[in-house]
Amino acid sequence: MKQKFDIITSTCVPLPLENVDTDQIIPARFLKATDKEGFGDNLFRDWRYRPDGTVVEDFVLNNPKYKGCILVAGKNFGSGSSREHAAWAIAGYGFRVVISSFFADIHKNNELNNFVLPVQVSEGLLQELFSTIQNNPKAEVEVDLPNQTVTNKATGRSEHFDINGYKKHCLMNGLDDIDFLVASKDKIEAWENKQNNQ
Image (cartoon, rainbow, N blue to C red; front, top):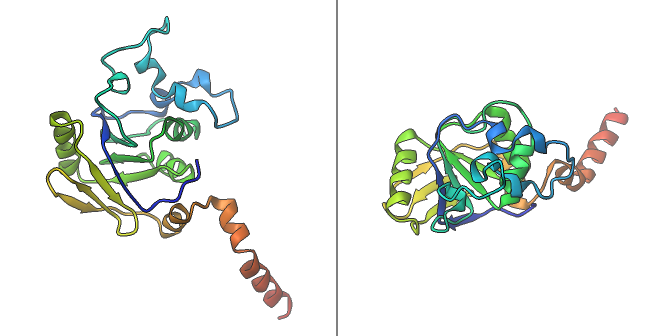
């Protein structure tokens, strides 16, 4: 799942539902596993499949006209429990970016820790994106992490988004928290030596 981020341009999968919680993203019965592999298969499981395992044809992830590595979701995405498995499922399915007008804080950080970029936009741009995608599923969105902008390529409308500077550095360099510490080993040891010699 570790991939460096720069500029991502992709078609999008629209999920115009508000208050999508982590139990809807990955139902609790799938939380027994401690390995990240395979969670993408059960992303939005109860919306994608009926209890007997048959496919719900009209759910967006089962609609072949919607593809891409950007999920565009309604307001208050990732509310509910703090389960990191929800971010595992999103990343495991292949989404690299989630765009919404509001994210639950813990889920937002879980996405960042799993190399999924949460991009918070205005409600106006979010609704424009839903409209654009509905009218043309092949429409593309550009997410520029270095410049922290998201652009609807169909209309040219662009907005700046915020991201923690440390997390931006990690995403752009493909580093998780452990990788960052290992890469900083010399600096840490130099600081420790300086403290010990005072």
